[in-house]
Image (cartoon, rainbow, N blue to C red; front, side, top):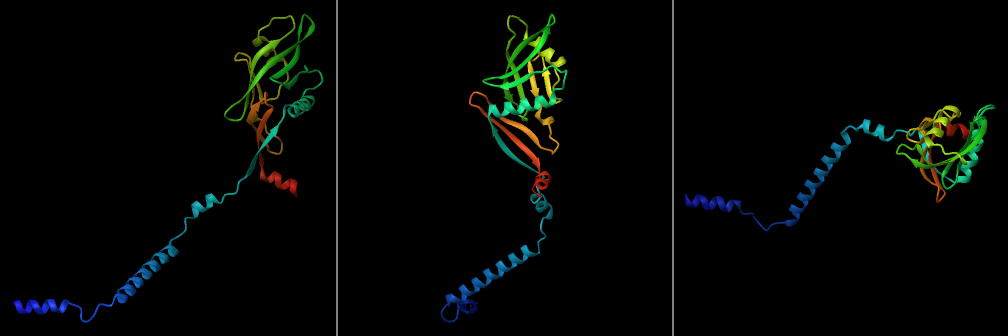
Length: 214
Protein backbone atom coordinates (compact mmCIF):
# COMPACT_ATOMS: atom_id res chain seq x y z
CA UNK A 1 0.00 0.00 0.00
CA UNK A 2 2.84 2.39 0.87
CA UNK A 3 4.56 1.51 -2.40
CA UNK A 4 1.49 2.41 -4.49
CA UNK A 5 1.16 5.74 -2.65
CA UNK A 6 4.73 6.67 -3.51
CA UNK A 7 4.14 5.82 -7.20
CA UNK A 8 1.01 8.03 -7.26
CA UNK A 9 2.76 11.04 -5.69
CA UNK A 10 5.70 10.71 -8.06
CA UNK A 11 3.34 10.79 -11.05
CA UNK A 12 2.03 14.21 -9.94
CA UNK A 13 5.46 15.84 -10.04
CA UNK A 14 6.19 17.63 -13.30
CA UNK A 15 8.63 15.92 -15.61
CA UNK A 16 11.49 18.19 -16.47
CA UNK A 17 11.92 21.92 -15.58
CA UNK A 18 8.82 24.20 -15.31
CA UNK A 19 8.40 26.61 -18.28
CA UNK A 20 6.94 29.93 -16.96
CA UNK A 21 6.39 31.35 -20.47
CA UNK A 22 3.93 28.55 -21.15
CA UNK A 23 1.67 29.72 -18.32
CA UNK A 24 2.02 33.36 -19.32
CA UNK A 25 0.90 32.56 -22.87
CA UNK A 26 -2.04 30.52 -21.60
CA UNK A 27 -3.06 33.47 -19.37
CA UNK A 28 -2.90 35.91 -22.31
CA UNK A 29 -5.00 33.61 -24.47
CA UNK A 30 -7.64 33.37 -21.73
CA UNK A 31 -7.67 37.16 -21.35
CA UNK A 32 -8.10 37.73 -25.10
CA UNK A 33 -10.94 35.23 -25.23
CA UNK A 34 -12.71 36.96 -22.33
CA UNK A 35 -12.40 40.41 -23.98
CA UNK A 36 -13.69 39.04 -27.26
CA UNK A 37 -16.75 37.48 -25.65
CA UNK A 38 -17.54 40.74 -23.77
CA UNK A 39 -17.24 42.85 -26.93
CA UNK A 40 -19.48 40.50 -28.90
CA UNK A 41 -22.17 40.69 -26.22
CA UNK A 42 -22.16 44.50 -26.44
CA UNK A 43 -22.50 44.46 -30.22
CA UNK A 44 -25.55 42.19 -30.25
CA UNK A 45 -27.31 44.06 -27.37
CA UNK A 46 -30.20 46.21 -28.77
CA UNK A 47 -29.88 50.00 -28.38
CA UNK A 48 -32.32 51.83 -26.10
CA UNK A 49 -33.98 53.90 -28.82
CA UNK A 50 -36.51 55.51 -26.46
CA UNK A 51 -33.83 57.23 -24.42
CA UNK A 52 -31.96 58.35 -27.55
CA UNK A 53 -35.13 59.86 -28.97
CA UNK A 54 -35.66 61.94 -25.85
CA UNK A 55 -32.12 63.27 -25.80
CA UNK A 56 -32.26 64.18 -29.48
CA UNK A 57 -35.48 66.14 -29.33
CA UNK A 58 -35.14 69.50 -31.07
CA UNK A 59 -35.98 72.56 -29.01
CA UNK A 60 -39.01 74.44 -30.27
CA UNK A 61 -38.10 77.80 -28.72
CA UNK A 62 -34.97 79.80 -28.06
CA UNK A 63 -34.54 81.92 -24.91
CA UNK A 64 -32.15 84.75 -24.18
CA UNK A 65 -31.71 87.59 -21.70
CA UNK A 66 -32.15 91.26 -22.57
CA UNK A 67 -30.78 94.09 -20.41
CA UNK A 68 -32.42 97.50 -20.53
CA UNK A 69 -32.40 100.94 -18.89
CA UNK A 70 -35.18 103.07 -17.42
CA UNK A 71 -34.99 105.60 -20.27
CA UNK A 72 -35.53 102.85 -22.85
CA UNK A 73 -38.46 101.37 -20.95
CA UNK A 74 -40.05 104.83 -20.57
CA UNK A 75 -39.86 105.42 -24.33
CA UNK A 76 -41.38 102.02 -25.05
CA UNK A 77 -44.23 102.49 -22.52
CA UNK A 78 -45.01 106.00 -23.80
CA UNK A 79 -45.24 104.75 -27.38
CA UNK A 80 -47.40 101.77 -26.36
CA UNK A 81 -49.82 103.94 -24.37
CA UNK A 82 -50.19 106.37 -27.28
CA UNK A 83 -51.16 103.43 -29.47
CA UNK A 84 -53.42 101.86 -26.84
CA UNK A 85 -55.36 104.84 -25.42
CA UNK A 86 -58.05 106.06 -27.80
CA UNK A 87 -59.66 109.46 -28.15
CA UNK A 88 -62.01 110.13 -25.25
CA UNK A 89 -60.17 107.81 -22.85
CA UNK A 90 -58.58 109.21 -19.72
CA UNK A 91 -54.91 109.73 -20.45
CA UNK A 92 -52.23 108.62 -18.02
CA UNK A 93 -48.49 108.06 -17.88
CA UNK A 94 -46.29 105.35 -16.43
CA UNK A 95 -42.68 106.38 -15.78
CA UNK A 96 -39.71 104.69 -14.13
CA UNK A 97 -37.56 106.90 -11.91
CA UNK A 98 -36.23 105.96 -8.47
CA UNK A 99 -39.70 104.44 -8.12
CA UNK A 100 -42.36 103.58 -10.65
CA UNK A 101 -44.82 106.46 -11.08
CA UNK A 102 -48.36 106.34 -12.38
CA UNK A 103 -49.46 109.88 -13.26
CA UNK A 104 -53.08 110.60 -14.09
CA UNK A 105 -56.11 112.73 -13.36
CA UNK A 106 -59.59 112.36 -11.94
CA UNK A 107 -62.39 114.86 -11.48
CA UNK A 108 -63.38 116.52 -8.23
CA UNK A 109 -66.40 118.88 -8.40
CA UNK A 110 -66.00 119.17 -12.16
CA UNK A 111 -62.27 119.94 -12.04
CA UNK A 112 -59.42 117.72 -13.17
CA UNK A 113 -57.06 116.89 -10.34
CA UNK A 114 -53.68 115.42 -11.10
CA UNK A 115 -52.23 112.68 -8.93
CA UNK A 116 -48.90 110.86 -8.61
CA UNK A 117 -49.05 107.28 -7.44
CA UNK A 118 -45.63 105.92 -6.45
CA UNK A 119 -45.02 102.18 -6.67
CA UNK A 120 -42.19 99.77 -5.86
CA UNK A 121 -41.69 96.96 -8.42
CA UNK A 122 -41.08 93.34 -7.44
CA UNK A 123 -40.39 90.38 -9.72
CA UNK A 124 -42.43 87.29 -8.88
CA UNK A 125 -41.22 83.68 -9.14
CA UNK A 126 -43.05 83.14 -12.44
CA UNK A 127 -41.54 86.24 -14.07
CA UNK A 128 -44.47 88.61 -13.58
CA UNK A 129 -44.21 92.03 -11.90
CA UNK A 130 -45.97 93.38 -8.82
CA UNK A 131 -46.16 97.13 -8.31
CA UNK A 132 -46.76 97.87 -4.64
CA UNK A 133 -48.15 101.35 -3.91
CA UNK A 134 -45.91 103.24 -1.45
CA UNK A 135 -47.31 106.79 -1.46
CA UNK A 136 -49.76 109.14 -3.18
CA UNK A 137 -49.53 112.82 -4.02
CA UNK A 138 -52.69 114.83 -4.89
CA UNK A 139 -51.84 118.42 -4.10
CA UNK A 140 -53.83 119.67 -1.12
CA UNK A 141 -56.24 116.75 -1.11
CA UNK A 142 -55.97 113.96 1.41
CA UNK A 143 -57.36 110.78 -0.12
CA UNK A 144 -56.50 107.16 0.68
CA UNK A 145 -54.50 105.16 -1.85
CA UNK A 146 -57.24 102.52 -2.06
CA UNK A 147 -59.71 105.17 -3.26
CA UNK A 148 -57.48 106.32 -6.12
CA UNK A 149 -56.55 102.78 -7.13
CA UNK A 150 -60.22 101.79 -7.17
CA UNK A 151 -60.86 104.76 -9.47
CA UNK A 152 -58.02 103.63 -11.75
CA UNK A 153 -59.40 100.08 -11.94
CA UNK A 154 -62.89 101.28 -12.89
CA UNK A 155 -62.24 104.35 -15.05
CA UNK A 156 -58.89 103.80 -16.75
CA UNK A 157 -58.46 101.75 -19.91
CA UNK A 158 -55.81 99.16 -19.05
CA UNK A 159 -54.44 96.20 -21.03
CA UNK A 160 -56.06 92.83 -20.31
CA UNK A 161 -52.88 91.52 -18.70
CA UNK A 162 -52.77 94.40 -16.17
CA UNK A 163 -54.76 93.86 -12.97
CA UNK A 164 -55.42 96.38 -10.19
CA UNK A 165 -55.98 95.10 -6.65
CA UNK A 166 -57.07 98.21 -4.74
CA UNK A 167 -57.50 96.33 -1.42
CA UNK A 168 -53.90 95.08 -1.45
CA UNK A 169 -52.76 98.32 -3.14
CA UNK A 170 -51.13 96.35 -5.93
CA UNK A 171 -50.92 96.65 -9.69
CA UNK A 172 -50.10 93.27 -11.27
CA UNK A 173 -48.35 93.02 -14.62
CA UNK A 174 -49.16 89.47 -15.72
CA UNK A 175 -46.48 89.16 -18.38
CA UNK A 176 -47.24 85.43 -18.77
CA UNK A 177 -50.57 86.48 -20.32
CA UNK A 178 -48.92 88.95 -22.70
CA UNK A 179 -47.86 87.35 -25.97
CA UNK A 180 -46.91 89.12 -29.19
CA UNK A 181 -48.30 88.09 -32.57
CA UNK A 182 -45.05 86.28 -33.42
CA UNK A 183 -45.35 84.11 -30.30
CA UNK A 184 -42.66 85.92 -28.32
CA UNK A 185 -43.06 85.70 -24.53
CA UNK A 186 -41.47 88.17 -22.11
CA UNK A 187 -40.76 87.44 -18.44
CA UNK A 188 -39.08 89.72 -15.92
CA UNK A 189 -35.84 88.59 -14.32
CA UNK A 190 -34.61 91.62 -12.38
CA UNK A 191 -35.81 95.19 -11.77
CA UNK A 192 -33.49 97.42 -9.74
CA UNK A 193 -34.46 101.05 -10.32
CA UNK A 194 -31.78 102.41 -7.98
CA UNK A 195 -28.94 100.94 -10.07
CA UNK A 196 -30.87 101.17 -13.36
CA UNK A 197 -30.51 97.42 -13.86
CA UNK A 198 -33.53 95.94 -15.65
CA UNK A 199 -33.44 92.48 -17.22
CA UNK A 200 -35.95 90.37 -19.07
CA UNK A 201 -36.00 86.85 -20.48
CA UNK A 202 -37.26 86.56 -24.05
CA UNK A 203 -38.60 83.30 -25.51
CA UNK A 204 -39.20 83.11 -29.25
CA UNK A 205 -40.36 80.14 -31.36
CA UNK A 206 -37.63 78.89 -33.69
CA UNK A 207 -40.06 78.81 -36.60
CA UNK A 208 -40.39 82.60 -36.36
CA UNK A 209 -36.61 83.02 -36.46
CA UNK A 210 -36.47 80.85 -39.60
CA UNK A 211 -39.10 83.08 -41.25
CA UNK A 212 -37.03 86.23 -40.66
CA UNK A 213 -33.85 84.63 -42.02
CA UNK A 214 -35.42 83.53 -45.32
